[in-house]
Length: 100
Image (cartoon, rainbow, N blue to C red):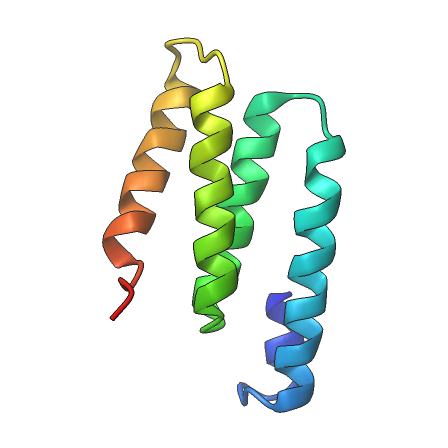
């Protein structure tokens, strides 16, 4: 998805926004098929970061909410990978703009 912006020479056009929205929607729908809970969390978080990086605030909000919901439903182990996920979520929430 970052290469799409590179191909558009850094400009965000309507065509690029539509492509990004469609791609994120497709990923949002297909991620629940994955069985491994930690992989789901990582993908939702990564998609949230991509949405925010491309100024798609509503998509980033819905993806991070889904990530947090998934986090609440997931039995997590206390390993380094889990702590990294928590750290990335908290860091993302600090940068994420709030509703006006």
